[in-house]
Amino acid sequence: MSDAAEPHPGLARAAESGIHRIPVPTPFAVGRLNCYLVEDDPLTLVDAGPNSGTSLDVLEQGVRDLGHRLEDIELVVVTHHHLDHIGLVGLVAGRAGAEVAALDHALPYLSDYRAEMDAEDDFASATMVRYGVPADVVEALRSVSRAFRGWGAGARVDRVLRAGDVVELRDRSWRVHWRPGHSISDTLLEDAERRTAIVGDHLLAHISSNPLLSPPRDGGERPRMLMTYLDSLAATRAMDLELALPGHGDPIADHPRLIDDRFAMHRRRADKLHRLIAERPRTAYELAQSLWGNIAVTQAFLTISEIVGHTDLLVADGKVREVADGDVVRFEAATEPAEQ
Image (cartoon, rainbow, N blue to C red; front, top):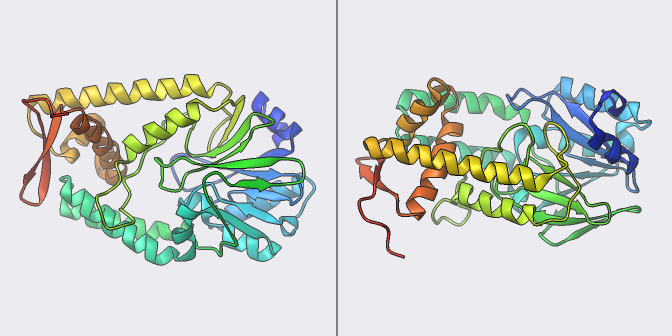
């Protein structure tokens, strides 16, 4: 599928600067992943798609449609460590002899994929139990997660990026920004001269990125991912951009307006949860069922991440508190404001 078939003006503008979108299929509800082939020196691919023959065929055809071969790619850059973005990185790099560049926070997932997936599954299972998901649902979802692992794969990382680094190509420079929230490894590549950035799943036009709960890297408390994400969005809002190229869906031409919409949406959701909790104490799972019904069962970890992210905001504001009930946590309305 070539950019010529795409009517969006942002894609035409990106193509003029040598950035071409190749949308490859994924097994996930979010839909196709946007890989970006950057015609520069070195010839660069940003993200590679999930590990499947169909995705590889589409990616390879997209590269050919642009007048290149997969073997011509010299650099693969990863925006974050989720399965649909990293699955083909190692295969592409191996076939092409390409260098792989990824943020330091993504390095563990690429270097030791199986162990990191085991740790994430353990964390997800324990988190779901803690927040009220029934044990049989947790076990079923763990089996699903194990089955989905095949869509991802590890890869050798040749260049470890850190926030503030600059990736120099012949015709452009990308400033590396760390924007944790949707994942712990979210990376933005900013071309300040062209006021353009490749933003991965940090900001999507058609849906709100889900800040997934993540295990702590240092053995301490879990990161408050929605709170972290809102801080990251605020930093991105302040950037001088005319075009943001996301990991899914169409380009974003007015990122401050979209981010303001996301801020308002998160405030509305937190307020709605506060009203539900004020009616009676509830687990995160019960809150998720109140909002989304059966989706709370089939996508329990996603919905628990969404609920707990917003209750983190309410706890921080002193409106709600967590109360242990055996091995399960419930949320109840706070009768007294939290001390500042």
